[in-house]
Image (cartoon, rainbow, N blue to C red; front, side, top):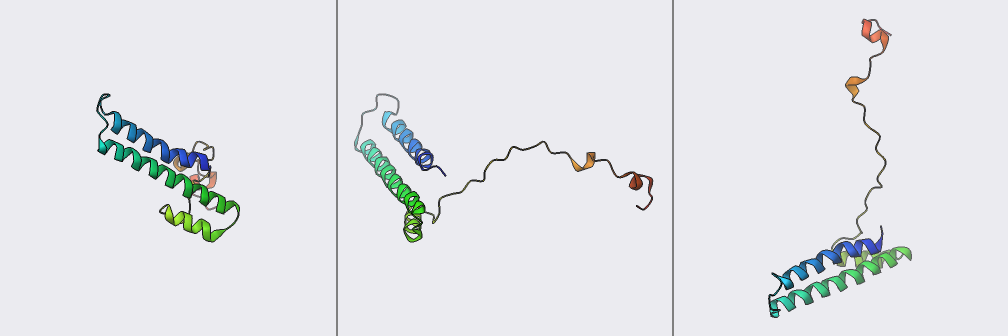
Length: 109
């Protein structure tokens, strides 16, 4: 799993959510609620990036206890694993396969 991509996949939605909240209808004054939302997004982003990087580093060092602690502090003991995509060949329905010649005539093989 790519650390950079996993961090981006978390940080970009946080940033976009904050920008939408802060900008509102482009002209909304930044009040204390907006600032709090921005600080919350920033703290969340830093927290995630630090512990995700620590988890990745611990995995490379094969330091299982640190990887476990970092993972638990992220909400799950291990990072998600996504199966590799295989190029899918078109499936042939079983009904279209022709039966063996002996079976078609009703004779035992």
